[in-house]
Image 1 (cartoon, rainbow, N blue to C red):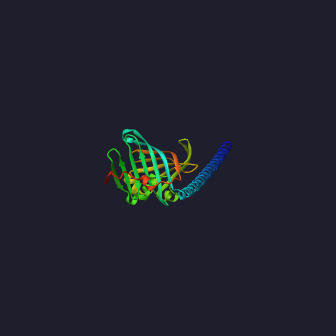
Image 2: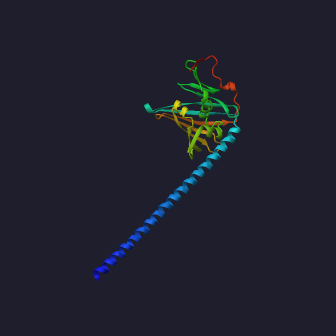
Image 3: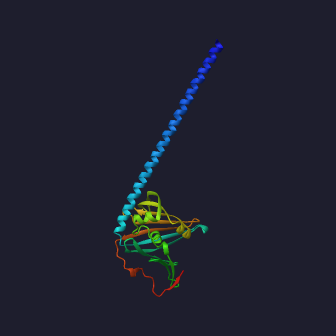
Length: 255
């Protein structure tokens, strides 16, 4: 009797433990399901918020582009060469001129020992070397619109063009060079362009107040980077086409 009672008691305890384990397992599964559902909802909320913020930014860029006529600014360019762990810094200015809605031309002048001027006009890029009074000319061809958008991001760039030419990610607010800014990571949609230029990503920061460029960082395959910091940006200026002209007597070398 005693043995039978002990057996029954043991069986009862075992049964209770099984019920407990099953209940605990069910509770754990339900908890995991709740956590998964919460994570999914959080991701959907975050994605929706990001999409809304991006749409708002693109609309603002469209509005800014519609009233853009020209700009001038000071620029500081830091070029990092990964193979030798060296950063070279140059300073100069940039002039941007709208020639028709959505079409621009611009000139960058870098001062100092390694002075040069870069002109993007029509379907060509021209590099002027004052040391020997020569101009190297490169044809942009089918990359004309992408190159112009790439090299003058923030100066009259419409949200439509930005979205058409780049994948936009990591939209964020941060302080850049003391200015509240909207930053984003851009990846060119043209795989051919990325292969030819070795460009992997562009990080762009625009002033939150007026969407004028504050910083652009270009990252290339192999770890090289080129960072342009803009200051004293002025817009709404009328820039004559002749202001962008390179010296007429310079020798041109077409590549």
